[in-house]
Image (cartoon, rainbow, N blue to C red; front, side, top):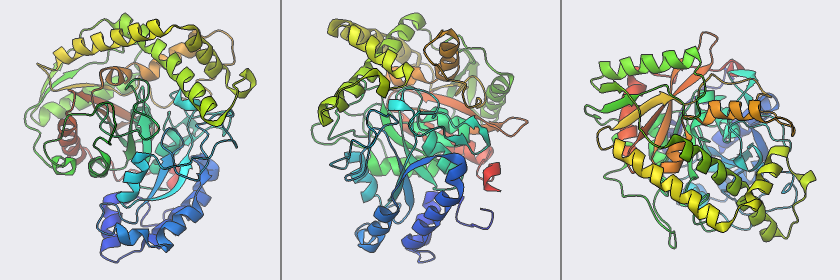
Length: 481
């Protein structure tokens, strides 16, 4: 990998090289295929190879149609969850769907990704239906963290994050229903932005997912790639049930824009009561100091809301999400769910979801919406919150294993990973994980910022400023040596 000069360039740089004729899309695709062959046996990040589809995209001239697109010719990976590619298998990490389901159409997001010029070269690993903050499905096995292959890459977009961190591709599709963009970004030393609810479309199959808890975007190596990709994909599609507020200008123009003097509320208080690792505590303190040095106002406080009410409602929403996913696929492909086809946690969540009434579901959504109003009030006096993304550095593989016994330890571990991220899914607000800290043993620690509803521009401005003040693009994981 050290002899591969293109591996750690960002997508914007690679697209520029293609436009100038310094490299061809075909050469980039072959380089990506070669990296998958070399690195994936150790990482297990890519679970569906799309070599021929990628080669065909170049050979059949699609790149000519998008030669002026922002990412023309840049290889890309698609997470095997929600977003679909016509003619390619989809399993969402589940034995229930494996070898039984072939997508019949492109998702609207995939249509827009192709229009942006990316060449999709494979699909990445995900936990079963994206339900866990680690990527260790029984179907495909664990994805390993490029910084330490004995540790988790996070979830549920762990396959995408591991592939980007290892240099296989410069950016990859990800989605986020409780932290699934930001948690893997934190574990793998990447930039991960969760957009405002409904910023990206989920059609034509879905109007939304989890009543708006889940959103689509990507994990990236650079801030500018995230901004430019969101410019290319954002906006409502015909028939969408609702959409995010319009942006003032292209997001890529926000990256170098002066953020002004921001009012930032810093905290290490976890919503789930999780104990904060000393490295995460130190990371927040150092980042708060850096923000002050950059001219921002930092206050140690946090939004006040009914935390227990939110936790109960969000847990209910997650069981409903499992039930929705399983029943939806069962109806679409005429499948019958049986316990032996699922992991123990998934089956338990499915059963719990099925026991709840429709009225209870609507009451739960009302609780989440009321908490969202409480949190929104806090952002009348503050621009951002600052916390760690997760309560500890990347955990060892197997940390989230549960085989049907006592759930207390399992839920405690889940709480360490969801205690700072899930509130942004409940409120619909945009949030990001920024790789600003590494531990003494060279593990990444993400810093989490949440902005008011619709304010991705604020996040991109600050992220660009932080990327300049505390750069991370020079860092390489051991697997890339």
